[in-house]
Image (cartoon, rainbow, N blue to C red; front, side):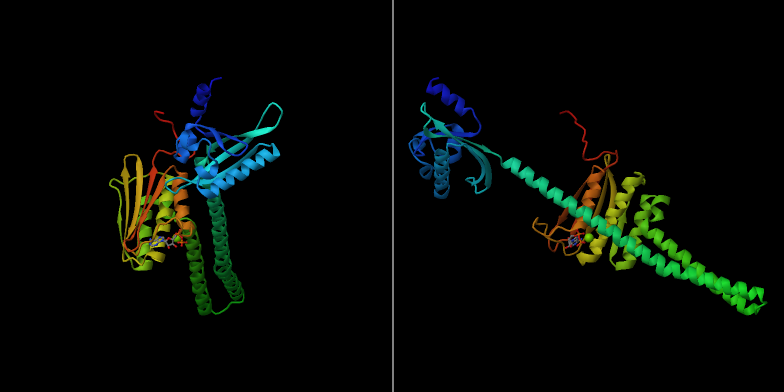
Length: 357
Ligand SMILES: Nc1ncnc2c1ncn2[C@@H]1O[C@H](COP(=O)(O)OP(=O)(O)O)[C@@H](O)[C@H]1O
Ligand SMILES: [Mg+2]
């Protein structure tokens, strides 16, 4: 095959390809190789890697050439290089010995494929797995905490009250049998009524904590109003709530998600923002439901190096599970805005429709 034809094959390979003699001098290179080092064939052929690449890489390439020649074995390895713009690029490189008819190594052939995108995808996958692990550990610990709290409340409050009621009823029973003093019995009874009242309130509080009944009973708008009032009462921060007209009834899962996301967002405003005002709006945009929580507080840096906290991750996951997304806008001194967009038609992010592909 003529040299021109060989070169045509080489130049049409998107990977960098080259041939070197036993002294690491380039004999043939392809277009992709020349583009990568920014030199022409005339500037490359007959030179060694140290002349072509920045010195420390050049030295390394000569070393691997020599290792391949000495061992007569093919090598394959991943390496990093910097692009002209200073970005890290990743390459999968193969170097193989070239033998003559007598089986003597006369040079090396090499191919280097850029795998930066794959590396990034692997990195993202690793990070998202780590994030999922963190999130599930967090959810686990939240669940345990909640159970501990409920168990304590059941035992300490409800349990104690019920025991007191039992004892009181026993004493009353005794008094009735033995013709006790009517006035004392009446006062014992009213004490028991108060205790029963207590018990019933404590059950209500527990149940409301677990799942606000207002969410199931009166719909999303009422639940958000209830939550807004509770927030204002608890924090003294002004909070305006704007609801869609006419009211929307997106149904169970979406309502719970909107409610819980608003709860976490307002908790963050109370805990972190040092705000004097917050605003919550819910509105329809086409077939999406948009919840926005804005505060006028101190804001935050959104740099990706900030430690990852799980409140925001949890809100994002909730939105994502319903096929929606969460956008966070904030900068120091300029408040924070969280916007969640949820599709009203159910759909999740794992099985997206393929429209007009
Ligand atoms: N509304 C807000 N204003 C200012 N800073 C906020 C706000 N919301 C969140 N942050 C910052 O972002 C961090 C992460 O929030 P989050 O994920 O909910 O975790 P946590 O509330 O447990 O710290 C908070 O620790 C806080 O520094
Ligand atoms: Mg939080």
